[in-house]
Image 1 (cartoon, helix red, strand yellow):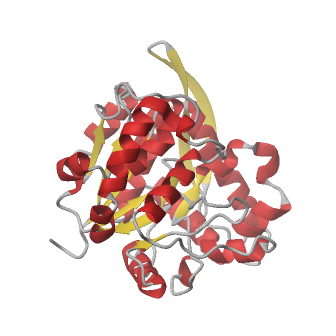
Image 2 (cartoon, rainbow, N blue to C red; image 1 turned 120 degrees about the vertical axis):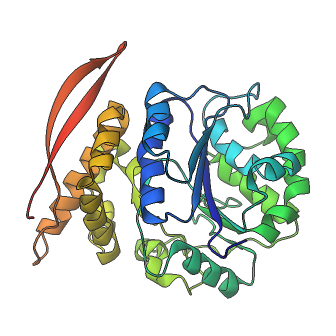
Length: 334
């Protein structure tokens, strides 16, 4: 197996399927040697997801619909399922040909980085002397941030615990925890990691926002505290009132996030990206538009030329029984 043999995977249900087209595109564009699999948790793939798979048919992407059918669902429970994919049976079925694994939320646009995501996390594993790369959230005890990089040895070592929790979650969902925090999935990850005999990763200083942003910086892969976005987290834009707040603007003004903004503008020049955006439901498109707007605002405060960003003219068209926003994109500053 190649040293580049890495699999991205995640779970997306309901309205979160709307992020699948751009998630698949961004990873396959940024890391064409890697494979990406999205599981829909027993739901059929939406028509726009099926179309996106057809448009990306020459890339290493897949959508699996038949896992977790019949599991107790509701709320954030589907987010827990991504950490149940390392059962003995599922690992053999989907992951046996891979050396490395990375999982994150589906509402990310992943961008290429130098050194690569794989190199960063392998270095971080060495720094921690652990077969996985992650961090503890600073404001909750006993939960691990859901952006997880794992080696094959880690995946094999946790299988017994994943098999146990798979049966519990199937029947009880998040009720398996007596006192459940908002992040059910991250609590589950912590339990699986520690009960498999691994120590937890370092915890961030709870009083330092600047340290948290250092945690996001991909250049800090040789530090103990390291959990980058590796791209643009569209989910930040779900709360529009907070998006332009001082804390987030401080993050978006960081050089590495401005680098992500420049990469997004490059994606926008690709007709395939434009086509995928045109079939993407309004829920996801709206968040893309918000992030473009706020990242451009950050860039305009710097004494450098603004990167090419999309000039958005939004129209509506009927698609079946739904109405979707269609963006026509014209690049500026070319």
